[in-house]
Amino acid sequence: MLYIVSTPIGNLKDITLRAIETLKSVDLIAAEDTRHTKILLDAYQIQKPLTSFFEHNQIKKADHLLGLLKMGKNIALVSDAGTPGISDPGFLMVRLAQENNIPITVIPGVSACISALTASGLPAHRFVFEGFLPPKSGARRNKLIALKGQEATIIFYESPHRLLKTLKDMQDVWDDPTIVVARELTKKFEEVRKDKASRLIEHFTLHAPKGEFVLLYQGS
Ligand code: SAM
Image (cartoon, rainbow, N blue to C red; front, top):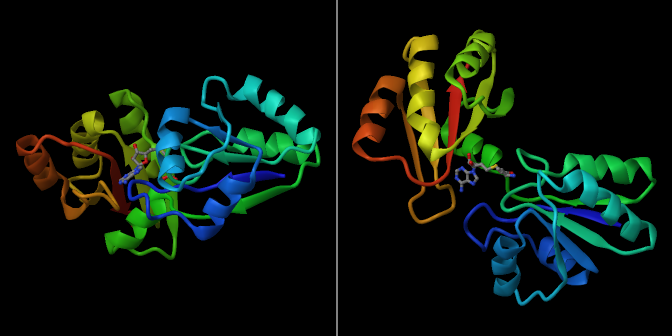
């Protein structure tokens, strides 16, 4: 069995009983960063062999994991935070397992995009998850232009060092829209800030962006 296991996005208590049970029961845990996952495992006294499964080794590693699954081993796939496959490695492994008739089960849990959406106060009946915008400004602006007129709440992941650049592109392309910035969810410095892009730019110019960010925009 291949288990796809969600893990916390900051607060280690945000793990499900089923996730703990599963991590305790499998033969092997495939993790994006084994040192990072070890912190979670130690917190719950879980002692299981770990192997790395990250973006740049996933194709080769998936074949190896498939071999073990075919031998009857139980493997849990986790990422550094949240739900595997959501802006993280995961779907290739699931597809390979499906194609080889390996049973798969999901242990659902936290994802930053859903946590941010529910905390944003923006309509959640229709939403689009865009993940990370392109790092280069030209491509990023083109993407924002293409998203104009989407009748949905649009969710982006963003890194602290690109936050201001992205907010500036949103200000230009979407004519100073209202944006929700959800920062460090479930952690000590959690905050959800809703304001015009121009005012958010002022704020984050004065207070250098730190931590992890989700940006949300109510398309119309
Ligand atoms: N698989 C993860 C999930 O289900 O949310 C996402 C992994 S992605 C590589 C990491 C990005 O998720 C961060 O750069 C940030 O945009 C967002 N993120 C993760 N944890 C967060 C948190 N505690 N608060 C706000 N955003 C977070």
